[in-house]
Image 1 (cartoon, helix red, strand yellow):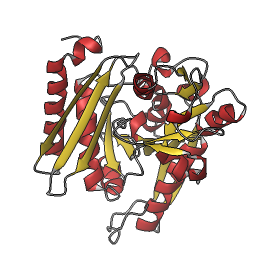
Image 2 (cartoon, rainbow, N blue to C red):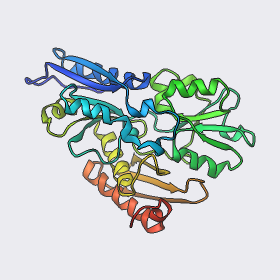
Image 3 (tube, one colour):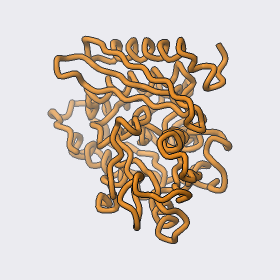
Length: 321
């Protein structure tokens, strides 16, 4: 995807350092932002600082057991605090819903396909899997929704970067795996997708398919420079999703989905669901607003979260009242 840019301002940066995880997908994302910044600021040297995070190192346990999404961002944030990096690029679905106090989301880029993708070497779809087939996913949300629709399947955790997950499938450890379609498409691996899981069957996670750029809250200069790359429609939509998830304690420990789209008549439509881990219980809610700005989106996200809360979402997710 490309972002149209206007002429660079007179106070354009001379050098920017992007902190990034070293997985192939994370580096693609960093290189993508590097190219956008270089196009907008031709005289700026944009450098990528590759790093390995705790979330990348610990692969023998589910993410929900070892500290959650923050394990993919902490080392990058330390690099910014220490002055070794100016910004960090993330898959927005991997960014904690509540950023640490010293940090801010400086921009959200145009969204890739937000849906889930079914990947298998032997089967065409989830519906085609035989009873007892092993399906791998790293997401409690995906796992719960698969268990709800296909209780005869065995759904097991699947950790590692995208290439590691595909390798496990190719070794025959799983009959199929379910991944974010966006990552496969960004790496030119769309041919591995056997089927796109419809949103009606697997509502996407908050922020899925979008890239976020984080910087120190005090670095208003950096926020201004990278803010020029922001895609306002996507930012508003993911703001509704992230607000809903934040209100309901959304994390990798919670089977929660939230997906916001533009309405043809204007404004936004937000759909969300909360499930029990086994998929037996499912609560669903939706709402609309007439404006498509961030403030209106966050009000919408809070309102739909309250609807789910009134239905019993907090009890289902074992959250404090």
